[in-house]
Image 1 (cartoon, rainbow, N blue to C red):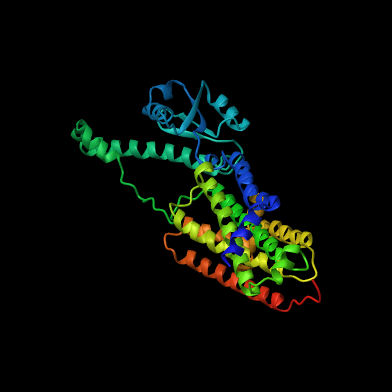
Image 2 (tube, one colour):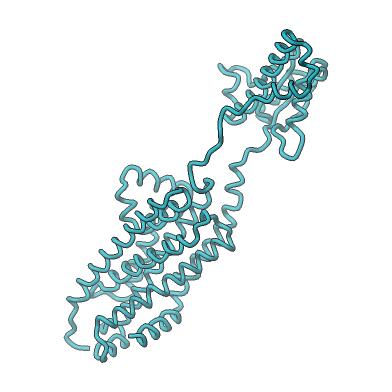
Length: 393
């Protein structure tokens, strides 16, 4: 049995087509993803808001000008400010879309927000984020100015204490930032997880090819093994164990490349990821065994079925871009059973559960489904294999 395992493993590693699909393809595709998605997460960060100020005499002599200077300078500025001489020039920039909005200062030193004319709300022409930033800037200054006015009216001597004034202006945070997920949400990791789901399905080619090699009607090697001393059950067990081992090795190589070369985050749970890959490789081996056991079909036909099924199922795992990812999410919400019956989606969700959830319950649930799915496929494969009889070799 050990000899069968050893020579099956050697035979599989020396098959070029298996090397391409099970090993090289995931690495090449992840390298392509690395260049495609290099700026995807960076686009989610907030850039300085392009804005304009009317730098007239009222503005230059106001405390609001000092606040704008603080917000537009430094290593991480909030505003990207342009100065113009008149309010008309500022409105022209806003209408043209060159800036998100702007400020002027009235005779009393209060800031006035400048937005596109002809709208019901001064913020309707701005993006939601930029409008919030500009509005908060004006409101914050107005609140602090009103607070200092009240202090000067009720207790003028308090203004002489700089620490007391600073403490009054530093309002306590009304919200606390908490993370509802184990890892920080990232758009790009979803595509790499879907890639691993596709890679797991491609390794099913290994078991399919190995099983075809032990079938006497498809290969000379299978005919020799059929008349050999080793029982059919032990031959199949050694063959499938070698197939699973090679499938797992290919997935671990792809995982190591994605983790350490591409730099994809797996939430610090790399050990559990490898356990999940072992279960995914087992499911892929079961799928390949089932297709390989189909009677009266040639090896190229079986390989074509697996390749087509892999590409089709990967569509519903969201591998082929953001529209496909949205489609996969919509289908999973509307018909949750489809996510369970799709091995590519199931493997993808296995990594989601490790990355996004603090608890390990969702991960083990996906693991049990993978193992149960694999057991069902192995049982179906056994039915086909047991009924196969050969009139002559």
